[in-house]
Image (cartoon, helix red, strand yellow):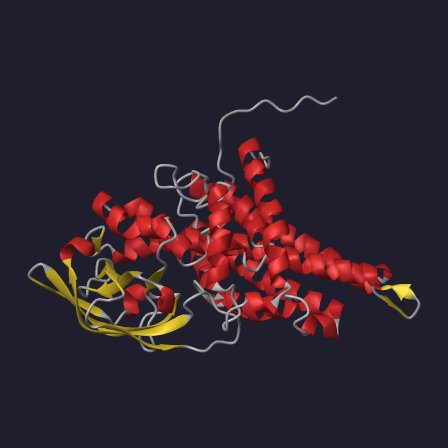
Length: 410
């Protein structure tokens, strides 16, 4: 197995690391750079985005002809982890959810006219976007195919949409929306995906839902569709392909969350380790205590386990697989790891960690959602059990590749 990365990926990783160190980390120390929802202020963000564009650190995940750098998922994993050393990192490089997943799926499945109208403005950073799927009870959550209540009824060359969605990330700041709605009762082909703008009649944001932690730009909103009309040309893929589109989008999107969360987990260890080496209590340095060594050693190991899981899933996606079980394993492990890393770092920092003098409390509140977004832990574990029941011992099989010569021993 080859765990090396290409010189090009390493070059981008190093440049991102320098950008984060020089441009982003200093901003976190000044609360005036935060907006009221504890994200980076939009005017500050735009100036940094211009710098990232100028340095070629923009939309690494997209093909060069789309406006990106043509990185595969493995290259993304390396760079996304580095980006999220800062809590502001991903959005600066146009690699934050939900735009990140929306751009990748539009690049993959949209028609050329749709890409020009709906994708390119997101790529250029002129608009934000949202993915509109989740509904209030008893509507769809992790089971969109069986539970979706929002309907899109075809009338001549248009679809009439009625329904309610909620926890739609980024909606308040978004101009472009990917909507999934029911067009028939077929269990596999009953959903369809649509594109629409924020100013369409019959569409409104009911409220921005208050949450425990800091928020992405545009928050998490409840949306109402009241006979909104969408032209048939705005259907993504074909009528009935909505479930397929969600599968194409959500696997890579879940994994990019994990890539970014690894960066935050490493940041927690960094803050904890620095403080432990600087702090003396009862005549000795904190870092010399066995209990602290065990905490930090375990976190280092769990982060490396997470990186290996993410890399295996990234590699599988690059090979053309949906990588369902690989993504699910990474999602469960890294989501829990992020919470553990923030909690441990706060414990080591004591009252300082619980205060806003560091970003640890920010990460801690943010981390709790990780075990819920894009499928709760329990859903992914059920996916893994179903796969195990189907594959048996082949659940753990290695995929054979071409014959390779063993390295020479010296």
